[in-house]
Length: 554
Image 1 (spheres, helix red, strand yellow):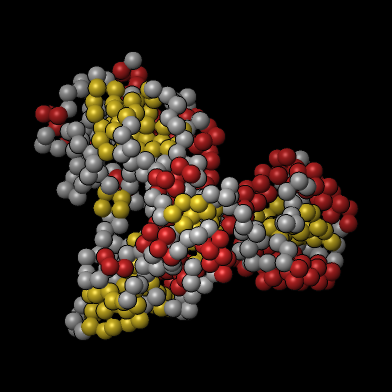
Image 2 (tube, rainbow, N blue to C red; image 1 turned 90 degrees about the vertical axis):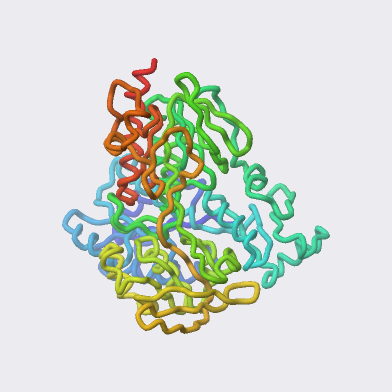
């Protein structure tokens, strides 16, 4: 396979030579560097490269060129290679044009010339953009392959797990892919064996469970220490932030995740109100960056492993895992987040994983091509999912019980939904029944004002309702509010049972539960703000309180 391309254009030949030299010094082993001083020649080359099936990873274009401004060139280039990253080279006087280009051509970055030294001003920017591009780039595939039925719950669970853990895989639908039939035939497999997972070493597993798949994919490293300073339960934004700060500050840090890093935020197709990302960032990209950063700083991550209980043992905590193992730690941070509440209407459970999904389930979006798709829920996650699904579906309908989205969704998302022609909000409505044969085919929707029922064809239903904290497994004397969220800090002190349970000479720390040394951060905590930024802040802050607690028990 030929290397992907970094494509450069600048009408100043001297500047272009310098740029090409710097790029080749850094990226020649992984990318081809192509350059031109002519816009016309550049556009002709792009068409030729597209016809050859070549991939362009990144464009770098000068803004002030006599034939065409750089923004206009990028606008034309993105129509040919829409997935390539786009960087504008500008003089200081052209920064306004560059900022306007963020919306015009979804510009990823702009660099002010000169970029010397490149080790500080050029390479860090391009490294990040190329890393992001590699997350979605799919070359000729040689990794894990999953063969199964599109509307199989087990097949969906396998795909969702690998996607959530950022493990590349190829999905081969047995009904539409010739390669799937050939692989099955050559290995003496029948449709009763589906789903089957093939690995790059030539082996395969029939109907694997998540734990078996994780072990084969190398996602279950062994625990290294007999005692940790802090164990974080849950690898959402709060857990990843705690992992980054814990390990960076010298603590022996372990992060346990029962499914995949990122939590609900990790499945978001686009987060646009997170500080520092003017064009937004996907939940998968944010998760990948956070996970990489935590591991680089020394955090151990084990997944998929669930914690079934916590025990207090003479000043340290023992965590009981669902695989039978026990982990000892001096402190614990619970960042298990929340689960979407389940719909209990008739037929919903029959088609879960077969057209009905809880959360974004982006792995299934392409299967909705040309169909009517429904989203239940009025929060930001529902809006972000609707925007993503609108790229594939014929129509996306958002079902909410309220009249509109004003009180539940961010204004920027409401504006985007209103500007998207194939998205419609159906207020004062609810789903009464799901119907189909082997997969979801129809939904019965009721107008809550008139009580009139209507039946609609449905290719898929995505559910984003309520927030149930994942705390059922927690015992000890850890206080919870009426909805099951963990109480911390002042809420613990105000609880009627405080004097009976809390036996320390000090008050609980801000994020400390009613059990000393056990902290809670993010959405699982009572009174949290339910935003990615606040979860990251709480996860980071929890490490500060861990330090204070550990200083007491030495």
